[in-house]
Image (cartoon, rainbow, N blue to C red; front, side):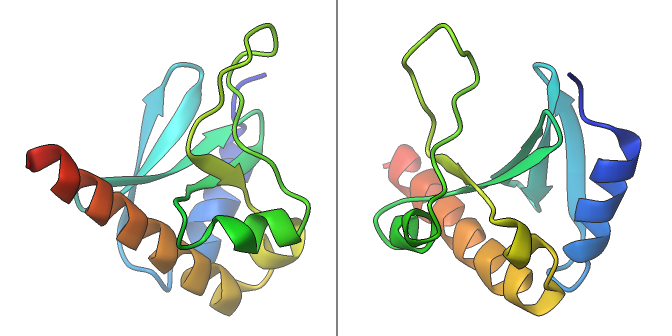
Length: 113
């Protein structure tokens, strides 16, 4: 199921405190960018943020799991689903999004090395 326009608009509104977020359609979903940093995914009307060892525990403590784009394949990505209570709280979501943006920045920096 593709991402609905209503869900995309809702997530972007909830992220408005973070700054200008650019959505880009990709592979049946929507990638979210802050400047040039790819930090979030909308897929099947679910919202995922980029993780590493610095923020993965936040998601796992809430029982969230890694983004798995293909049900028939075991591969997961370094993005975890955002808990509904975080998505619904603009201030908390901004904190989680900033952490994901920092993860994306570190990942980009290590790629350039």
